[in-house]
Length: 390
Ligand SMILES: [Zn+2]
Image (cartoon, rainbow, N blue to C red; front, side):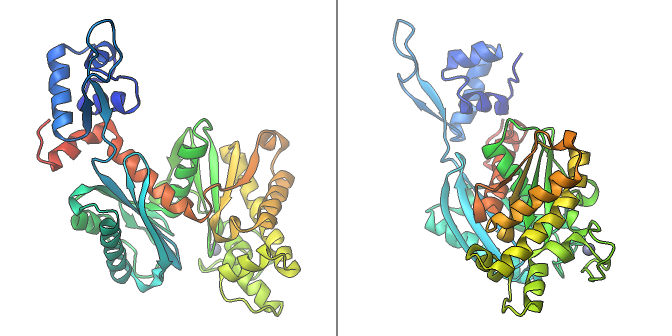
């Protein structure tokens, strides 16, 4: 028997498994009067639209066709990095209605940064010709661990620990707000859009810092306190006495991150200030930058070999400012992983760059928001917010 709840009926139509009233009755086994009541609510709420005589003919007059109204609302998505932010508005079909990106400093703290995010969202709503009342969910990705909608002891986000990010955004826009560690959202976005048939996948972000998002059995693995995938602080070298922001020495992050490469190139007498500078040099084929990028990839690959042994993924996707700019980083990762992990674990393993490039974070948080809004279990709440009783 099919789930005959309001959300269940909406999903049937949204996924194209039912087109007419008769289809809904056939698939759910619900009575005609119950189906009429459910569809009445969904039509009144604007979640469905009806086209007269557009359904398939079964001999007589053609029935009305029901379709999901993808324009009924929007979701707001923000991907915040250490030094930049990308924001976008999506309709419920996953189409971008407006998008923008700008430099920001996450270290300015939540009051400054979130005020900016809220203003940009309002501007994007104007640009997309939508109102605040149309917002059905907000999702925001941050470069650090998250627990219950709040950053949890994030190392590169001073002032953000335990700040009620989700509460603030949901109050401002009158809709549920989701907060996620950025690299988790990236893993989710890649999985849902490009690799839904793959059950186990690891997304590695190589930017100012390093982190991994892990999908096992098709779902995100967050771990205690949202700390799963924090591979930047795996000890990579016993010899290195390079001090990490976490207080330990020889961490992956201190040897292979964008900031590590900035330091290494600086020491080699090359004038670079940011991860973007390093990425640009590698892209331009600078031999010293290429050497360090490949070496960083090897260090990272050796750490990922341990992850591969535990998670047994069939795919590692590399992204982030350094990752998607840099074939040498990906080549180095392949080398490190294949050398250090068992041949059994790597027999069906591929290591690829992200297909979304620098948009992967915003695509990921939008995916999170859309899945939340369209989850059948949340449809009643959505209707209640619009003052419609289920
Ligand atoms: Zn560390």
